[in-house]
Image 1 (cartoon, rainbow, N blue to C red):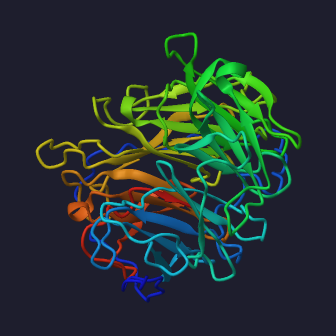
Image 2: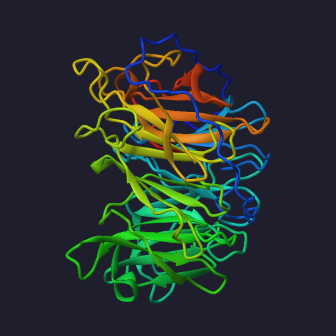
Image 3: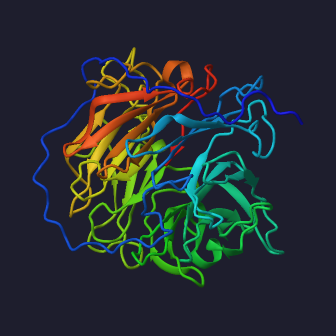
Length: 491
């Protein structure tokens, strides 16, 4: 079939620099406290785990960023969806080398579909073991891998079979999926909820075959039988600190009328080992925002997960069994003392989460999006959105020195308007220069749901709006109408 006009593109464009915004509508940035005493240095992460420098699709050592625009028009096909890949450099992302991909791009399986909404840029990792990170696309039962290469994500891709990897293989389910190295062989694996008669967990162990999408091996676990748990979603991180990624399984207790619960499945070379119970506050929801990093610098990755329907963010501290004993897991809301903003129904605090060191004190911090947050004027800023930054410390997350930003914060381009959804997605990208990190924030409702992504710099004082810039699908040569650019992104 003849491909339509929109193909992989590499176009020259400059970053759009916005004008100074209005007075802050939701800004709380008290002076930062003295840096806490540092504990013993954590063990270095093993190659292949998620505690690395982020996605590197072209293997040049710099972090890249993939941004979805699931309602973008492809040729004459409306709401078919595209993905933009921006490549990193020593000075940050270079928009002039960005590539726009769709199902019209040579190599991408399938063809553009009206209302196809090719949407979830879900996770990244080297799934075929060739040294280049790959991009997992995920929407319902339609799972696809776009392969990395020395030229980055070119469009070569493979659709993953829904099941029948083995005679007894369960059907894979979309939504609850993540990527990491769960068997310690330095090749990334896909972990997903799957149907085992009841909802359980399966792992597609890499390397994946680039032609068929089939894994080298598959692990299945009937969590209903073994763990009394109906799996809702899964998260992958090295929670036990042994250099092999683990799986936090969240869902509902089988014999508890759907009572929320979870379990840690420790990764190993030979299979999962049951770890601690995981006090997940979720039932059966999937596609929940998640991020991992060492918030208290104890050598164990910690897990942050958003639950936007309840405007909550859950933090689980890692430990030898996957759950910390010194620091207890807890839930954060805007009602907590020190957290900027006011807790209101429908704010969707937790729409996005990102974890990384934003103030260069050695502790990872937690970035939280609230894409339905309303500013000071409900008539003009309903669901305009906001982001909050909570600092990490030796005692874990602290609300001391917390910050919040909206488009009305000083120097951030554009202004807060109804349905902008600033904070729908968030990613921390390391530039490669002195360990500097930039915070990227998506607002898919900006400009009548065309969407936009903002870049906020970080430094010794944390995230700042000074010098902030923004870009949209048109900036990188994509379709100018519609798009929801920035609804999801991963880096």
